[in-house]
Length: 504
Ligand SMILES: [Zn+2]
Image (cartoon, rainbow, N blue to C red; front, side, top):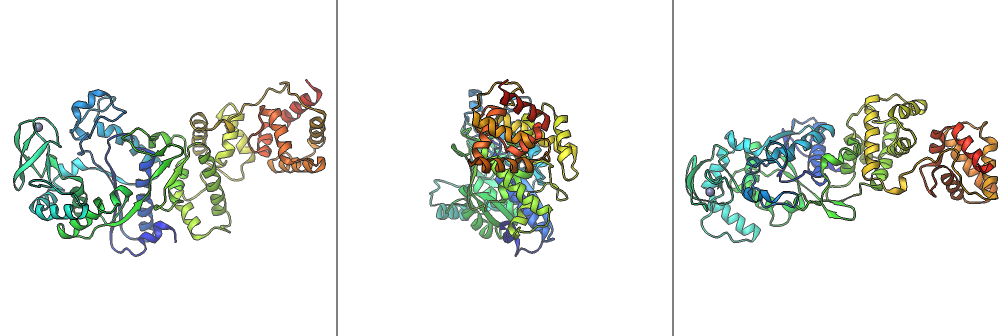
């Protein structure tokens, strides 16, 4: 059974899937695993016809922990401020929105229907007031759980609440000295002495308490999270005890997912700057492909993300599955069927008329989108939505510009460009020319012709391919030859080969 279906198969009653992020920097492709895993679980629940809800919590009350490498030194003065109270690195908005907004657009494009909720709004609306009150009244119990499970000693008087200093604006420099609902009395390192109302966004619970408090207040039943939270003694371990023993609820069904590793670079972290922003990657990877990349790997295993050749390999794989899915479905097992279904943004049709690899060839042959469209219409076997296809063309162009390795890039040589060939090469080319007018002009027959010639000359097909690549793009390797020559057009191919044979 597909992993998302397996995880939700025994659930009953209404379900709420929760995911989230602390928007401290660019939301990167690694973070896509959180929300897409949540989305797959949400869709798996919906498939079982249980009532389902899906939320994405933006922890904008979290403080800026340090000046990250991608920030200017100016931000030193904001360390300790809640992210929502810090100006954006550019423009006039908030820091937290600056990083959240592009990601919300990504969610829309990738068909992720999560409701985005800001943690500050949960506090400000009083939704977390009861949880704050329960937590503070059970502070000794919570302290004991945190110390026992995490193995770390907490010094001094412990209050699971961090007031936001009214005077200096910091949330990590205050200490609670007394509490009487709804007010937490605090002192701050800046010298201020004040009161924070737990019914408003005047403070927050520390992460390890806030997390189970959200489960309690929002009735979360399913939650995917990264392995840092899931480590022994980590915040899920403390969270589930706090959930049961303090809030009197069952913790959500957990799903721990592994990291996405950027090929040759390591795990992505927004704090170090080693990351590709999700919004950037969504400009080069079609959404179905991104969804497939997450769906195809069990969450317990890491994903090697290679934005270069890896994308092409992934696209080939998905293409095959989609062909089978929209065809007779022979050879598709249950998992593969589920993967295709969960990756499709639109279940009714195959997303694009041309696979990504071929499109990468087309955008290098033709100069304009309209030429590509015309070419594809001629060979398309089914109807397609032009607007969608134009989008795919943009993906392919941007991928070529930004991530494609040189091995897949080429330029067509002019029809009269001089190339050195020997007599044997000429004989091979002449053999090809002999039948060129009579043969059906399509990828398959061109491909077969090359194999025929190789057999006749008792040489490897690869050496014939190489000869053609040298003539047409001046390289030893190139795109799939049948498809490539077909798109160059019979007339151009004929004229080019004639010129090469005659030495012009
Ligand atoms: Zn202060």
